[in-house]
Length: 279
Image 1: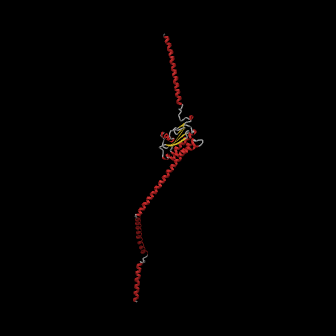
Image 2: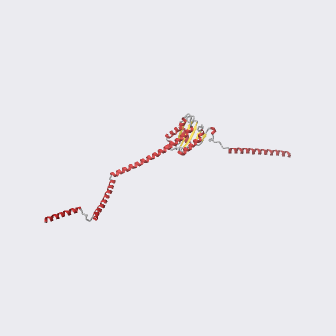
Image 3: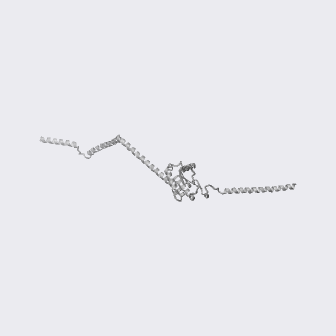
């Protein structure tokens, strides 16, 4: 009986050893799988070239309309931001699936993304044939003007009217138009500042002329000038007279006053006549 019990214990030891080996192999397999998952990079929605979908911070193209021009368009978006301060977002869908007006739908989509100030969205529904340019509500006035939005829409739509639509050129032409509108608004602002400065200077000149005319009419300026001129003439007369008298007496001691000379001549004539009568 003792030997039988010993045999059972040996079989149990072998079974336990087998379970240990199996558990170790399972742990090794799990560890290897974890290492493989850690080394292999995850696949994101952005890296979906095989599906023909582009999804970045600035571009959403579910129809692969931009194709290989995505990097070029991205550079143009960055350049537009640098030159004008405008953020551009591009959305290409098959349909807007909007019950109401497409422009309202696109504007609501833009505002739902909490856009930065001065953000422009170009949304295209290729199957519906719709193109919408929307501007965020927190943009500057020059960018929100209807004339600016119309110019951007026309620039984006023109390349799509060809027999072979150029989707990339549509986006770049719109961004070029943003630069044009920005320069135009800056030039207009400079002109208005210049006109305002000129008008202010002209108004100041008119005020000065009116004040001068009022003072002159009241003879305030005339009296002042008259008083100054009379004082000067009097001083000059007082200075000139003594100089003349001093010069006449000092330079010529035989100077005879004409009035005195006439009196003396008359006296001498009288004396001569009297002497003649006595003779």
